[in-house]
Length: 397
Ligand code: NAI
Ligand code: MG
Image (cartoon, rainbow, N blue to C red; front, side, top):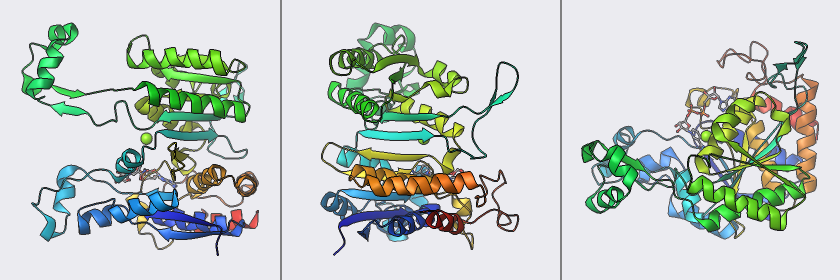
């Protein structure tokens, strides 16, 4: 019997391709597991009116650990039109299964590491003081609060009476927005709770300690967003002082951070932020290390449920190529994060070394690494296919 059971959720488009390749790499590296496929994505929205069927939730509940490719999602109207005719006009409204997963399992900790691979042609470069080209090595891990804040879903357009009346009790609302007709007002809230904020901060500091980073940078905007960012900064200072005195706490504003990350990215270690700012800053850093083909992520709760997925989506324009051209490394790296999560560090080390070797050799590169435009001709023009680069990684294990 296999040692572990992993729920595999390929989802849509290239999610299906990259997950298959990642599982091939896992098996070749000696990870002994059985994979049970979980249904998720567009196909299930269309046929069942639910992109995240209960049976998938049950599977994750039972087996705890899931690999996830990517899904397709479309705007509300289009989603309704693509429903199976017998489900149309039944009041079904499309909701993202990713957000659904996060909320159902309270996957409140999201980690997005971004580190430079030596020899990756997509690495960020800058001009040094003597105008020479420098390639700073980036090694950051972004901790993003994954369930609250601006993505918490508490929002209204033309807010109902009770909400509107409550808002009108706030002097700033009254002065700045009180004269606007209510039906012209849209409100998205940014709610932070102390418990969830402490959890993401602790997770960030613990990671910094475990992997010997010298600093944790809180990337928010406490000088302007005084209540939520302000609380996070206050708690960060308390936690650092009490429990992690050997680690420095840095405090940057999200806007300035987006500028600095192209000036001195090598100076940052662990970065921690709320939901939206964490999303933004992690995409910013991902751009420095090769973009979507390299951006991996982990999300987990405090009960051992973890979902591991690349940051990229289903890239529908590449989904139906006879031979896939997309880069599977983000998915493979996400699988390595899964291995770390279940204490299979020897295997994850082995895979990461093989990925690093493949990249530094520079012989087998997908179209993005070749800086080509993605097209069916990419393979003819010398780019490796998804399968070929996975083969090269397996060869280097
Ligand atoms: P996307 O991430 O699917 O693709 C954007 C572009 O990035 C692609 O056209 C391609 O040029 C490049 N790219 C993405 N993954 C790549 C890879 N592994 N290797 C090489 N190049 C890669 O984002 P897009 O086009 O905005 O969205 C497509 C669909 O995916 C939409 O339905 C969207 O809602 C969904 N989506 C799903 C996500 C998820 O499942 N986590 C995240 C983002 C988007
Ligand atoms: Mg994003």
